[in-house]
Image 1 (spheres, helix red, strand yellow):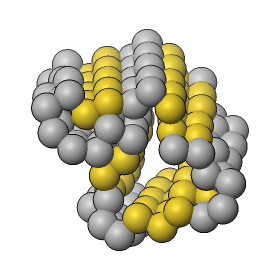
Image 2 (tube, one colour):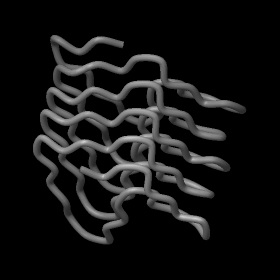
Image 3 (cartoon, one colour):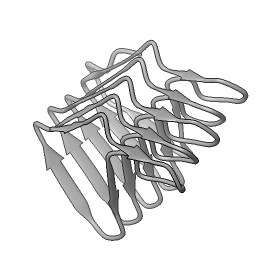
Length: 130
């Protein structure tokens, strides 16, 4: 459980990792980053399975719930009511993002694009609810 954490200087309100990370059945609730990556910030491949990221905020830039700077795989994960100042209110990825199942609900990018998510390419598998 990562809950009500803050990064007042820059990024990774809940968790900041500079290598590969796998999260299983993890909760990220109400975390805030001043710049980007409100909940999770990963600079290596990121895999999130059967988790909930809710009410996280990236105040200035991207990735309200999470930002990935390599590949991102979300399986059975729910991103609910997250917000980013610019891109990817729910999720932001500079690498390919694959979403299999789960849901993106009520996320928003305040000043730019990708309320639910922002990635290129984005691969949506069956059972994903946007």
